[in-house]
Image (cartoon, rainbow over all chains, first blue to last red; front, top):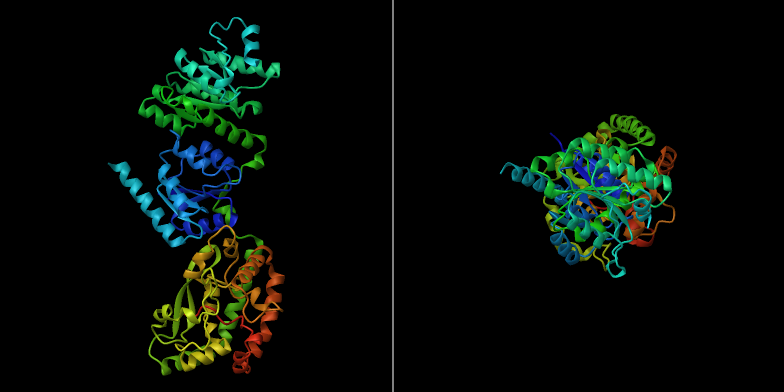
Length: 129
Length: 401
Protein backbone atom coordinates (compact mmCIF):
# COMPACT_ATOMS: atom_id res chain seq x y z
CA UNK A 1 0.00 0.00 0.00
CA UNK A 2 1.15 3.49 -0.80
CA UNK A 3 1.97 5.58 2.21
CA UNK A 4 0.18 8.87 2.68
CA UNK A 5 2.24 12.02 3.04
CA UNK A 6 0.83 15.38 3.99
CA UNK A 7 2.68 18.51 2.94
CA UNK A 8 2.05 21.77 4.80
CA UNK A 9 3.80 24.78 3.30
CA UNK A 10 2.74 28.35 2.60
CA UNK A 11 4.61 28.43 -0.71
CA UNK A 12 2.67 26.98 -3.61
CA UNK A 13 5.87 26.46 -5.58
CA UNK A 14 7.35 24.35 -2.77
CA UNK A 15 4.15 22.34 -2.46
CA UNK A 16 4.10 21.73 -6.19
CA UNK A 17 7.73 20.64 -6.11
CA UNK A 18 7.19 18.26 -3.21
CA UNK A 19 4.12 16.84 -4.95
CA UNK A 20 6.12 16.15 -8.07
CA UNK A 21 9.07 14.48 -6.39
CA UNK A 22 6.99 12.45 -3.92
CA UNK A 23 4.07 11.33 -6.08
CA UNK A 24 6.02 8.53 -7.72
CA UNK A 25 6.17 6.53 -4.50
CA UNK A 26 3.64 8.10 -2.19
CA UNK A 27 0.14 9.44 -2.07
CA UNK A 28 0.50 13.14 -1.43
CA UNK A 29 -1.96 15.73 -0.26
CA UNK A 30 -0.90 19.27 0.47
CA UNK A 31 -2.29 22.27 2.27
CA UNK A 32 -1.07 25.87 2.47
CA UNK A 33 -1.89 26.75 6.08
CA UNK A 34 -2.73 25.64 9.59
CA UNK A 35 -6.51 25.90 9.23
CA UNK A 36 -6.54 23.58 6.23
CA UNK A 37 -4.07 21.22 7.89
CA UNK A 38 -6.13 20.88 11.04
CA UNK A 39 -9.31 20.49 8.98
CA UNK A 40 -7.80 17.67 6.96
CA UNK A 41 -6.43 15.93 10.04
CA UNK A 42 -9.82 16.19 11.71
CA UNK A 43 -11.74 14.74 8.79
CA UNK A 44 -9.43 12.18 7.20
CA UNK A 45 -7.32 9.17 8.02
CA UNK A 46 -4.00 10.12 9.56
CA UNK A 47 -1.14 10.46 7.10
CA UNK A 48 1.95 8.31 7.60
CA UNK A 49 4.17 11.39 7.57
CA UNK A 50 3.82 15.15 7.67
CA UNK A 51 6.37 17.32 5.86
CA UNK A 52 5.95 20.89 6.95
CA UNK A 53 7.33 24.39 7.13
CA UNK A 54 7.21 25.31 10.82
CA UNK A 55 6.24 28.84 9.85
CA UNK A 56 2.81 29.04 8.29
CA UNK A 57 0.95 32.14 7.11
CA UNK A 58 -1.93 31.85 9.58
CA UNK A 59 -0.03 30.64 12.63
CA UNK A 60 2.79 31.61 14.94
CA UNK A 61 6.28 30.25 14.40
CA UNK A 62 6.34 26.49 15.15
CA UNK A 63 2.82 26.72 16.58
CA UNK A 64 1.46 23.81 14.56
CA UNK A 65 4.53 21.67 15.26
CA UNK A 66 4.06 22.38 18.95
CA UNK A 67 0.40 21.45 18.80
CA UNK A 68 0.86 18.27 16.82
CA UNK A 69 3.83 16.98 18.80
CA UNK A 70 2.05 17.67 22.11
CA UNK A 71 -1.20 16.10 21.01
CA UNK A 72 -2.42 12.67 22.09
CA UNK A 73 -4.20 12.43 18.76
CA UNK A 74 -1.37 13.40 16.43
CA UNK A 75 1.92 12.85 18.26
CA UNK A 76 2.26 9.42 16.62
CA UNK A 77 2.49 10.96 13.13
CA UNK A 78 6.17 11.51 12.33
CA UNK A 79 7.07 15.09 11.42
CA UNK A 80 9.71 16.24 8.98
CA UNK A 81 10.40 19.95 9.04
CA UNK A 82 11.71 22.18 6.24
CA UNK A 83 12.45 25.53 7.78
CA UNK A 84 13.59 28.96 6.70
CA UNK A 85 15.34 29.57 9.99
CA UNK A 86 19.04 29.17 10.76
CA UNK A 87 20.29 25.65 11.39
CA UNK A 88 21.03 26.07 15.11
CA UNK A 89 17.61 27.46 15.84
CA UNK A 90 15.90 24.80 13.77
CA UNK A 91 17.88 21.99 15.38
CA UNK A 92 17.06 23.08 18.92
CA UNK A 93 13.36 23.29 18.16
CA UNK A 94 13.32 20.10 16.12
CA UNK A 95 14.85 18.16 19.00
CA UNK A 96 12.60 19.89 21.49
CA UNK A 97 9.45 18.85 19.62
CA UNK A 98 10.64 15.38 18.73
CA UNK A 99 10.74 16.08 15.00
CA UNK A 100 12.12 13.09 13.05
CA UNK A 101 14.32 15.09 10.70
CA UNK A 102 14.77 18.66 9.57
CA UNK A 103 15.97 20.52 6.51
CA UNK A 104 16.54 24.13 5.66
CA UNK A 105 15.56 25.92 2.51
CA UNK A 106 17.24 25.69 0.12
CA UNK A 107 17.29 21.94 0.54
CA UNK A 108 18.40 19.04 -1.61
CA UNK A 109 15.23 17.20 -2.69
CA UNK A 110 17.12 13.92 -3.11
CA UNK A 111 18.29 14.08 0.49
CA UNK A 112 14.73 14.81 1.51
CA UNK A 113 13.51 11.73 -0.37
CA UNK A 114 16.10 9.60 1.43
CA UNK A 115 14.99 10.94 4.76
CA UNK A 116 11.31 10.34 3.96
CA UNK A 117 12.06 6.75 3.06
CA UNK A 118 14.10 6.21 6.23
CA UNK A 119 11.40 7.64 8.44
CA UNK A 120 8.65 5.58 6.85
CA UNK A 121 10.65 2.35 6.92
CA UNK A 122 11.79 2.99 10.48
CA UNK A 123 8.29 3.74 11.57
CA UNK A 124 6.92 0.57 9.99
CA UNK A 125 9.59 -1.44 11.81
CA UNK A 126 8.76 0.30 15.04
CA UNK A 127 5.20 -0.93 14.74
CA UNK A 128 6.31 -4.52 14.25
CA UNK A 129 8.18 -4.70 17.53
CA UNK B 1 -21.68 35.73 33.02
CA UNK B 2 -23.73 33.89 30.45
CA UNK B 3 -23.44 30.61 32.23
CA UNK B 4 -24.59 32.25 35.43
CA UNK B 5 -27.72 33.20 33.61
CA UNK B 6 -28.39 29.56 32.90
CA UNK B 7 -27.73 28.77 36.48
CA UNK B 8 -30.30 31.30 37.58
CA UNK B 9 -32.80 30.67 34.82
CA UNK B 10 -32.78 26.91 34.85
CA UNK B 11 -32.63 25.95 38.50
CA UNK B 12 -33.53 22.35 37.69
CA UNK B 13 -29.89 21.91 36.69
CA UNK B 14 -28.96 20.44 39.99
CA UNK B 15 -25.37 19.97 39.15
CA UNK B 16 -24.72 23.28 37.52
CA UNK B 17 -21.94 25.02 39.23
CA UNK B 18 -20.66 28.31 37.96
CA UNK B 19 -17.40 29.43 39.37
CA UNK B 20 -16.04 32.90 39.00
CA UNK B 21 -12.34 32.86 38.53
CA UNK B 22 -10.25 35.43 40.28
CA UNK B 23 -8.61 38.02 38.10
CA UNK B 24 -5.12 36.84 38.95
CA UNK B 25 -5.90 33.35 37.68
CA UNK B 26 -7.05 34.67 34.38
CA UNK B 27 -5.63 32.60 31.56
CA UNK B 28 -8.53 33.15 29.29
CA UNK B 29 -11.95 34.62 29.63
CA UNK B 30 -13.47 31.70 27.82
CA UNK B 31 -16.11 29.36 28.96
CA UNK B 32 -16.41 25.62 28.86
CA UNK B 33 -18.72 22.77 29.67
CA UNK B 34 -17.52 19.92 31.80
CA UNK B 35 -19.26 16.58 31.64
CA UNK B 36 -18.21 14.31 34.46
CA UNK B 37 -18.19 13.76 38.16
CA UNK B 38 -14.77 14.90 39.34
CA UNK B 39 -14.99 18.21 41.18
CA UNK B 40 -11.22 18.35 41.30
CA UNK B 41 -10.97 18.28 37.50
CA UNK B 42 -13.67 20.92 37.17
CA UNK B 43 -11.82 23.18 39.58
CA UNK B 44 -8.58 22.72 37.70
CA UNK B 45 -10.36 23.66 34.49
CA UNK B 46 -11.88 26.77 36.03
CA UNK B 47 -8.45 27.80 37.18
CA UNK B 48 -7.06 27.46 33.68
CA UNK B 49 -9.99 28.28 31.43
CA UNK B 50 -12.10 30.78 33.34
CA UNK B 51 -15.77 30.06 33.66
CA UNK B 52 -17.44 26.73 33.23
CA UNK B 53 -20.56 24.74 33.72
CA UNK B 54 -20.40 21.40 35.49
CA UNK B 55 -22.87 19.03 33.83
CA UNK B 56 -23.73 15.40 34.49
CA UNK B 57 -25.52 14.08 31.43
CA UNK B 58 -25.22 14.30 27.66
CA UNK B 59 -28.73 15.68 27.38
CA UNK B 60 -27.75 18.55 29.67
CA UNK B 61 -25.08 19.47 27.15
CA UNK B 62 -27.51 19.77 24.27
CA UNK B 63 -30.05 21.58 26.43
CA UNK B 64 -27.46 24.06 27.64
CA UNK B 65 -26.17 24.76 24.17
CA UNK B 66 -29.67 25.20 22.80
CA UNK B 67 -30.48 27.55 25.63
CA UNK B 68 -27.35 29.62 25.16
CA UNK B 69 -28.05 29.95 21.47
CA UNK B 70 -31.63 31.01 22.03
CA UNK B 71 -30.51 33.50 24.61
CA UNK B 72 -28.09 34.87 22.04
CA UNK B 73 -25.14 34.79 24.37
CA UNK B 74 -21.56 33.79 23.84
CA UNK B 75 -21.11 30.09 23.34
CA UNK B 76 -18.60 28.00 25.21
CA UNK B 77 -15.32 27.17 23.47
CA UNK B 78 -14.96 23.60 24.59
CA UNK B 79 -16.64 20.58 26.10
CA UNK B 80 -14.51 18.39 28.32
CA UNK B 81 -15.84 14.86 28.26
CA UNK B 82 -14.75 13.17 31.46
CA UNK B 83 -16.94 10.11 31.01
CA UNK B 84 -16.23 6.48 30.12
CA UNK B 85 -16.13 5.88 26.37
CA UNK B 86 -19.45 5.10 24.80
CA UNK B 87 -19.36 5.52 21.09
CA UNK B 88 -23.04 6.46 20.79
CA UNK B 89 -22.76 9.23 23.35
CA UNK B 90 -19.63 10.70 21.82
CA UNK B 91 -21.13 10.41 18.38
CA UNK B 92 -24.34 12.17 19.36
CA UNK B 93 -22.41 15.08 20.85
CA UNK B 94 -20.22 15.39 17.82
CA UNK B 95 -23.24 15.25 15.48
CA UNK B 96 -25.07 17.85 17.53
CA UNK B 97 -22.31 20.40 17.27
CA UNK B 98 -21.49 19.59 13.64
CA UNK B 99 -25.02 20.08 12.44
CA UNK B 100 -25.10 23.58 13.79
CA UNK B 101 -23.04 26.26 12.06
CA UNK B 102 -22.89 28.34 15.22
CA UNK B 103 -21.43 25.48 17.20
CA UNK B 104 -18.87 24.37 14.65
CA UNK B 105 -16.00 25.98 16.49
CA UNK B 106 -16.77 24.11 19.69
CA UNK B 107 -13.87 21.90 20.70
CA UNK B 108 -14.46 18.41 22.09
CA UNK B 109 -11.84 17.08 24.49
CA UNK B 110 -11.77 13.55 25.84
CA UNK B 111 -9.94 12.23 28.88
CA UNK B 112 -7.21 9.74 28.08
CA UNK B 113 -7.55 8.35 31.61
CA UNK B 114 -11.03 7.14 30.78
CA UNK B 115 -9.97 5.32 27.62
CA UNK B 116 -8.52 1.88 27.11
CA UNK B 117 -5.92 1.44 24.36
CA UNK B 118 -8.47 0.10 21.90
CA UNK B 119 -10.97 2.81 22.77
CA UNK B 120 -8.22 5.31 22.24
CA UNK B 121 -7.64 3.92 18.74
CA UNK B 122 -11.33 3.97 18.01
CA UNK B 123 -11.89 7.52 19.17
CA UNK B 124 -9.00 8.68 17.00
CA UNK B 125 -9.97 6.82 13.83
CA UNK B 126 -13.63 7.81 14.17
CA UNK B 127 -12.66 11.49 14.65
CA UNK B 128 -15.02 11.78 17.61
CA UNK B 129 -13.07 14.37 19.56
CA UNK B 130 -10.69 17.21 18.65
CA UNK B 131 -8.16 16.28 21.26
CA UNK B 132 -7.51 13.88 24.08
CA UNK B 133 -5.83 15.12 27.22
CA UNK B 134 -4.81 13.66 30.53
CA UNK B 135 -7.27 15.35 32.87
CA UNK B 136 -5.10 14.53 35.87
CA UNK B 137 -1.88 16.11 34.69
CA UNK B 138 -2.31 18.18 31.54
CA UNK B 139 -5.05 20.66 32.31
CA UNK B 140 -2.55 23.49 32.78
CA UNK B 141 -2.37 23.49 28.97
CA UNK B 142 -6.13 23.34 28.49
CA UNK B 143 -6.62 27.00 27.55
CA UNK B 144 -3.73 26.98 25.08
CA UNK B 145 -4.91 23.79 23.39
CA UNK B 146 -8.55 24.82 23.30
CA UNK B 147 -7.66 28.29 22.09
CA UNK B 148 -5.67 26.87 19.18
CA UNK B 149 -8.24 24.27 18.20
CA UNK B 150 -11.11 26.72 18.54
CA UNK B 151 -9.35 29.22 16.31
CA UNK B 152 -8.67 26.56 13.68
CA UNK B 153 -12.21 25.19 13.74
CA UNK B 154 -13.84 28.62 13.64
CA UNK B 155 -11.74 29.75 10.65
CA UNK B 156 -12.62 26.58 8.76
CA UNK B 157 -16.30 26.97 9.61
CA UNK B 158 -16.64 30.62 8.62
CA UNK B 159 -16.28 29.92 4.93
CA UNK B 160 -15.59 26.78 2.98
CA UNK B 161 -12.95 28.54 0.89
CA UNK B 162 -10.77 28.86 4.00
CA UNK B 163 -9.90 25.19 3.63
CA UNK B 164 -7.61 24.45 0.72
CA UNK B 165 -6.62 20.87 0.15
CA UNK B 166 -4.63 19.87 -2.91
CA UNK B 167 -4.46 16.32 -4.14
CA UNK B 168 -2.34 14.89 -6.94
CA UNK B 169 -5.19 15.56 -9.39
CA UNK B 170 -5.52 19.23 -8.56
CA UNK B 171 -1.80 19.70 -9.11
CA UNK B 172 -1.93 18.44 -12.70
CA UNK B 173 -1.16 20.63 -15.68
CA UNK B 174 -4.06 22.65 -17.07
CA UNK B 175 -5.19 23.44 -20.60
CA UNK B 176 -2.02 25.41 -21.37
CA UNK B 177 -0.04 22.32 -20.43
CA UNK B 178 -1.97 20.10 -22.80
CA UNK B 179 -1.57 22.48 -25.76
CA UNK B 180 2.10 22.82 -24.93
CA UNK B 181 2.64 19.08 -24.79
CA UNK B 182 0.82 18.51 -28.09
CA UNK B 183 2.86 21.20 -29.76
CA UNK B 184 6.08 19.78 -28.30
CA UNK B 185 5.41 16.29 -29.62
CA UNK B 186 4.60 17.46 -33.16
CA UNK B 187 7.46 19.95 -33.30
CA UNK B 188 10.17 17.73 -31.83
CA UNK B 189 9.17 14.72 -33.91
CA UNK B 190 9.20 16.73 -37.14
CA UNK B 191 12.53 18.31 -36.34
CA UNK B 192 14.08 14.98 -35.35
CA UNK B 193 13.04 13.41 -38.66
CA UNK B 194 14.46 16.32 -40.65
CA UNK B 195 17.70 16.47 -38.68
CA UNK B 196 18.36 12.76 -38.44
CA UNK B 197 21.06 12.79 -41.20
CA UNK B 198 22.86 15.73 -39.57
CA UNK B 199 22.80 14.00 -36.23
CA UNK B 200 24.24 10.85 -37.77
CA UNK B 201 27.17 12.82 -39.18
CA UNK B 202 27.80 14.50 -35.83
CA UNK B 203 27.73 11.15 -34.05
CA UNK B 204 30.35 9.76 -36.41
CA UNK B 205 32.55 12.87 -36.00
CA UNK B 206 32.47 12.60 -32.21
CA UNK B 207 33.39 8.93 -32.29
CA UNK B 208 36.18 9.63 -34.80
CA UNK B 209 37.84 12.38 -32.75
CA UNK B 210 37.91 11.06 -29.22
CA UNK B 211 37.18 7.98 -27.20
CA UNK B 212 33.89 7.77 -25.38
CA UNK B 213 30.18 7.80 -25.96
CA UNK B 214 28.37 9.98 -28.51
CA UNK B 215 25.94 11.39 -25.98
CA UNK B 216 26.65 13.06 -22.73
CA UNK B 217 23.98 12.48 -20.07
CA UNK B 218 23.66 14.54 -16.99
CA UNK B 219 20.91 14.70 -14.44
CA UNK B 220 18.87 17.86 -14.57
CA UNK B 221 15.93 19.17 -12.64
CA UNK B 222 12.91 20.06 -14.74
CA UNK B 223 9.34 20.96 -13.96
CA UNK B 224 8.51 20.43 -10.30
CA UNK B 225 12.13 19.38 -9.74
CA UNK B 226 11.53 16.20 -11.66
CA UNK B 227 14.98 14.77 -12.26
CA UNK B 228 15.71 13.41 -15.72
CA UNK B 229 18.60 12.38 -17.94
CA UNK B 230 19.49 15.35 -20.10
CA UNK B 231 20.92 14.39 -23.51
CA UNK B 232 23.61 16.26 -25.38
CA UNK B 233 26.29 15.41 -27.86
CA UNK B 234 29.53 14.97 -25.98
CA UNK B 235 31.73 18.06 -26.45
CA UNK B 236 34.33 17.41 -23.76
CA UNK B 237 36.87 14.81 -22.95
CA UNK B 238 35.63 11.96 -20.84
CA UNK B 239 36.12 12.77 -17.15
CA UNK B 240 35.61 16.52 -17.52
CA UNK B 241 33.22 16.63 -14.59
CA UNK B 242 36.01 15.88 -12.17
CA UNK B 243 38.02 18.89 -13.31
CA UNK B 244 35.41 21.40 -12.19
CA UNK B 245 36.61 21.85 -8.62
CA UNK B 246 40.05 23.03 -9.63
CA UNK B 247 38.61 25.59 -12.01
CA UNK B 248 36.10 27.47 -9.89
CA UNK B 249 38.29 30.59 -9.84
CA UNK B 250 37.59 31.02 -13.56
CA UNK B 251 33.85 31.08 -13.05
CA UNK B 252 32.15 34.06 -14.70
CA UNK B 253 29.30 33.89 -12.22
CA UNK B 254 31.35 34.15 -9.06
CA UNK B 255 29.48 36.21 -6.51
CA UNK B 256 30.08 37.04 -2.90
CA UNK B 257 27.35 34.63 -1.90
CA UNK B 258 28.94 31.78 -3.80
CA UNK B 259 28.28 30.94 -7.41
CA UNK B 260 24.87 29.79 -8.47
CA UNK B 261 25.84 29.28 -12.08
CA UNK B 262 29.03 27.84 -13.46
CA UNK B 263 30.50 29.02 -16.73
CA UNK B 264 34.03 29.68 -17.87
CA UNK B 265 35.58 30.96 -21.07
CA UNK B 266 37.94 29.00 -23.33
CA UNK B 267 37.40 25.84 -21.36
CA UNK B 268 40.42 23.55 -21.95
CA UNK B 269 38.35 20.41 -21.60
CA UNK B 270 36.48 20.92 -24.87
CA UNK B 271 37.33 18.80 -27.92
CA UNK B 272 37.72 20.12 -31.46
CA UNK B 273 34.41 18.75 -32.68
CA UNK B 274 32.97 19.88 -29.37
CA UNK B 275 34.06 23.44 -29.99
CA UNK B 276 32.28 23.47 -33.32
CA UNK B 277 29.16 21.85 -31.88
CA UNK B 278 29.04 24.35 -29.04
CA UNK B 279 29.58 27.32 -31.30
CA UNK B 280 26.74 26.24 -33.54
CA UNK B 281 24.55 24.99 -30.74
CA UNK B 282 24.33 21.64 -32.51
CA UNK B 283 25.40 19.84 -29.33
CA UNK B 284 21.97 20.65 -27.97
CA UNK B 285 20.07 18.77 -30.65
CA UNK B 286 19.61 15.55 -28.65
CA UNK B 287 17.42 17.57 -26.28
CA UNK B 288 14.71 17.03 -28.87
CA UNK B 289 14.58 13.48 -27.53
CA UNK B 290 14.02 14.90 -24.05
CA UNK B 291 11.19 16.98 -25.44
CA UNK B 292 9.64 13.97 -27.16
CA UNK B 293 9.90 11.96 -23.94
CA UNK B 294 8.17 14.72 -21.99
CA UNK B 295 11.13 15.58 -19.76
CA UNK B 296 11.30 19.02 -21.28
CA UNK B 297 9.44 21.40 -23.54
CA UNK B 298 10.74 23.38 -26.53
CA UNK B 299 10.27 26.62 -24.60
CA UNK B 300 10.75 26.77 -20.86
CA UNK B 301 13.17 27.46 -18.06
CA UNK B 302 16.66 26.05 -18.41
CA UNK B 303 16.96 22.58 -16.93
CA UNK B 304 19.52 23.08 -14.18
CA UNK B 305 22.15 20.62 -13.04
CA UNK B 306 21.26 19.37 -9.59
CA UNK B 307 24.02 21.21 -7.73
CA UNK B 308 22.56 24.48 -9.01
CA UNK B 309 18.92 23.48 -8.78
CA UNK B 310 19.44 22.54 -5.13
CA UNK B 311 20.28 26.14 -4.29
CA UNK B 312 16.93 27.37 -5.60
CA UNK B 313 14.53 25.31 -3.48
CA UNK B 314 13.47 28.31 -1.43
CA UNK B 315 10.11 30.03 -1.04
CA UNK B 316 11.50 32.87 -3.10
CA UNK B 317 12.95 30.97 -6.07
CA UNK B 318 11.20 27.60 -6.26
CA UNK B 319 8.56 29.02 -8.58
CA UNK B 320 11.00 28.78 -11.45
CA UNK B 321 10.35 25.02 -11.28
CA UNK B 322 6.64 25.55 -11.79
CA UNK B 323 7.17 25.73 -15.57
CA UNK B 324 8.61 22.96 -17.72
CA UNK B 325 12.27 22.95 -18.57
CA UNK B 326 12.90 24.15 -22.08
CA UNK B 327 15.52 24.18 -24.84
CA UNK B 328 15.11 27.91 -25.29
CA UNK B 329 13.51 30.27 -22.84
CA UNK B 330 12.38 33.71 -21.84
CA UNK B 331 15.55 35.20 -20.42
CA UNK B 332 17.64 33.89 -23.28
CA UNK B 333 15.82 36.04 -25.81
CA UNK B 334 15.41 39.22 -23.85
CA UNK B 335 16.37 42.13 -26.08
CA UNK B 336 18.47 44.09 -23.67
CA UNK B 337 20.49 41.17 -22.52
CA UNK B 338 23.87 42.04 -21.09
CA UNK B 339 26.98 39.97 -21.63
CA UNK B 340 26.37 38.33 -18.33
CA UNK B 341 22.90 38.48 -16.89
CA UNK B 342 23.02 38.30 -13.12
CA UNK B 343 21.89 34.95 -11.85
CA UNK B 344 19.22 36.66 -9.80
CA UNK B 345 17.78 38.37 -12.87
CA UNK B 346 17.71 35.08 -14.71
CA UNK B 347 15.73 33.40 -11.95
CA UNK B 348 13.37 36.36 -11.85
CA UNK B 349 12.86 35.99 -15.59
CA UNK B 350 12.26 32.25 -15.09
CA UNK B 351 9.64 33.00 -12.48
CA UNK B 352 8.00 35.53 -14.79
CA UNK B 353 7.80 32.81 -17.44
CA UNK B 354 6.37 30.30 -14.95
CA UNK B 355 3.60 32.69 -14.04
CA UNK B 356 2.58 33.96 -17.42
CA UNK B 357 3.52 31.49 -20.12
CA UNK B 358 1.05 30.47 -22.81
CA UNK B 359 1.21 29.24 -26.38
CA UNK B 360 1.46 32.75 -27.83
CA UNK B 361 4.37 33.64 -25.57
CA UNK B 362 6.08 30.37 -26.49
CA UNK B 363 5.77 31.10 -30.20
CA UNK B 364 7.17 34.61 -29.70
CA UNK B 365 10.14 33.22 -27.81
CA UNK B 366 10.76 30.67 -30.55
CA UNK B 367 10.65 33.37 -33.25
CA UNK B 368 13.05 35.53 -31.29
CA UNK B 369 15.34 32.55 -30.85
CA UNK B 370 15.78 32.10 -34.61
CA UNK B 371 18.17 35.06 -35.22
CA UNK B 372 20.55 33.71 -32.58
CA UNK B 373 20.76 30.39 -34.37
CA UNK B 374 21.97 32.06 -37.55
CA UNK B 375 23.95 35.02 -36.23
CA UNK B 376 26.14 33.47 -33.65
CA UNK B 377 27.83 30.91 -35.81
CA UNK B 378 30.11 33.14 -37.99
CA UNK B 379 30.71 35.71 -35.26
CA UNK B 380 31.74 33.31 -32.59
CA UNK B 381 35.40 34.38 -32.37
CA UNK B 382 34.55 38.05 -32.51
CA UNK B 383 31.93 37.68 -29.85
CA UNK B 384 34.41 36.04 -27.57
CA UNK B 385 36.75 39.00 -27.80
CA UNK B 386 34.04 41.53 -27.16
CA UNK B 387 32.45 40.35 -24.00
CA UNK B 388 30.17 43.36 -24.03
CA UNK B 389 28.39 42.08 -27.09
CA UNK B 390 28.48 38.42 -26.31
CA UNK B 391 25.07 37.04 -26.74
CA UNK B 392 24.66 33.74 -25.03
CA UNK B 393 22.97 31.52 -27.54
CA UNK B 394 19.67 30.25 -26.26
CA UNK B 395 20.75 26.89 -27.53
CA UNK B 396 24.00 27.12 -25.64
CA UNK B 397 23.91 25.40 -22.36
CA UNK B 398 25.45 27.35 -19.53
CA UNK B 399 26.18 24.31 -17.51
CA UNK B 400 27.89 21.92 -19.86
CA UNK B 401 30.14 20.09 -17.52
